[in-house]
Length: 447
Image (cartoon, rainbow, N blue to C red; front, side, top):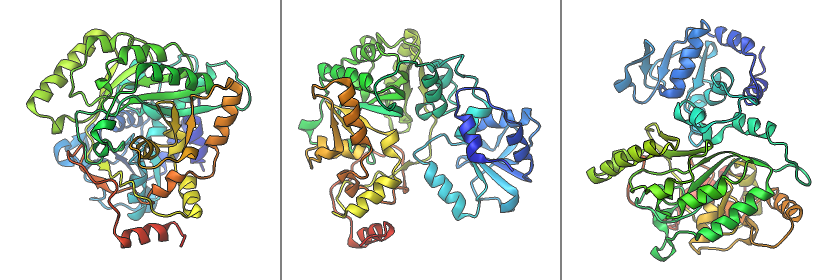
């Protein structure tokens, strides 16, 4: 019997994978469902066919529009009933934010045989390894995988990065640099809570501060798989070209992305310095809320980037976002905060650098940047004049704390689906009703 976790580890390693045992495992099921009929699902479906594995159908919320893919029926998830013990579902939705909810829905409907298609893709489809190295054009342009959070890419980078610094290695899968809180949109469920910023606090971080943070951060860590340079709207920062050039002086990151909603004019000077093979500009799925003028801007931006030679990718439309909830404080209980930190996946995935500080997550950034509350234990100061060795030691202590006070603002359940990019705002600091708070605390198993 195959050890799936061990197989996942091999898929995420830096070299080719022996998939024979995995293919035999798939053939032991009567029915194989591919949940997600976009680029990842199509790539995995083609690969399975090439190996003589006849999967049953696709599941996708867009079933009515797609109808068939690879001559296979596309159905709404759970609309067809299968023998749970003889069926496996391969999750071909490479979105790590909604992955927990997808798994929860499978389990609630009795499907306990499921596989992570985003990881399997690395093992059966990915052509990159420690000898080929990494390329944003290869990894991003196909739109087949979730390159922004890819363990295989991180491991390929680590295998090709021999530089050794003092003490235990500091390697990250993903990191974020916040360079602006300005935005042309007002997304109701923004994970950065931009609509809740006072107008006076919506600003660009000065380039000199960003340059200092880039140098200190990348000198301190060993490697980071992907860095996302974000806002707000990234392309509202006038010094984006200079920022890109500063990052590209370093060789200890795999990719650097400059996400955009695509609805503000991109300037040629912002693209100068982005021709590095590790750079990519991902366009988010916002066209459905754009007016005609914004759609024209989007089209012009695409043409400009094509001419510039910078790698870009247009995101697949997604049916829903997850509700980012609000920023209210639930409790002063240390047990609650320890519980939230222990179950949280943000620290290893979502540390955020903003204006001289490394914050533990986007909630920490919002609470501090809006001036709501100052938790000095919840950010790491990059402005201190310490040696690299001393900085690394202090950072390890910071990163390994068993809780942060920001955790007291984090609800246990964040799996509610909401409309994608719905314009408006929620009052992030409006208290929840008492029944909801009691439910949160009860689920955390504290008083």
